[in-house]
Length: 308
Ligand code: CDT
Image 1 (tube, protein in one colour):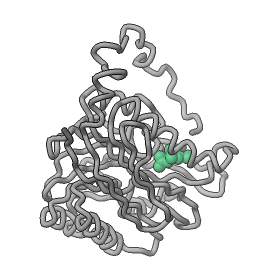
Image 2 (tube, protein in one colour):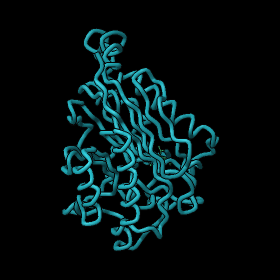
Image 3 (tube, rainbow, N blue to C red):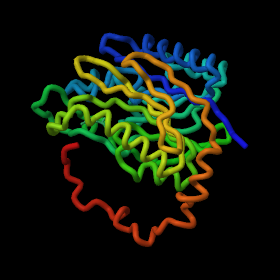
Image 4 (tube, rainbow, N blue to C red):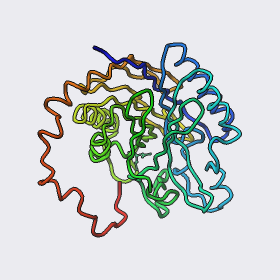
């Protein structure tokens, strides 16, 4: 028995600061068309996919900062993506900066089916810092976003249980375990990972190694499919790693981007594959020992503002 759904990941090359949202949305639409013609039913776009990764800049002017956020979704400029999703019958994950009516700012992703938002996630593990840093560029996610307030929910689409997360969330095993405990079979992830870590002299080759390490471990340890979509290439002077991929519940990378440009990758994912693992080595009901895991949920005492 198999239960196949074709998955797509749409890597974005750089969104330069002078590129309009309309231009970027057109690129997303082109990739959705390409994915649909390959037979894909679910596509993952990157984190903050509509603009450049603005947390790399210190922005004091509120109007200038607000211009990076969406105050409605769909917005007039993203409506065509929603319409296309309905016309092509392709569900999509999209990352963007959200400014709520009452003034809260989140790094958000949505899951859209047939033109309707069926799921929303707000990033929990915000990296970077909140004050100006003397460095080649900033990483001000802790300044420009609040910690997400929606938890790590799982949504249903095409009879699949689907979770979402954003970039730095992937480095935390709890992210995936909380979703897999709710039955997640697929997790969609968008990311912007700079090659250069401004917080310490992390060897640059480790950025891609750790990207794959955490994705492969998370997929295997939680018996789920993982779609990871990067923003890639040199954006606004900062180099982003790329490396978009689709990972099977075996922990194997089954499709991988080969460029740092706009690129669609697809894989015909068999959702029965996770079952073998879920019924045996990772049969949670039979083998987990949560009575020994209390430390994991003990509240953090001093939050501090440590480096990422
Ligand atoms: N966007 C995002 O979460 N990026 C982080 C890098 C932060 S380096 C200060 C990541 O985990 O890739």
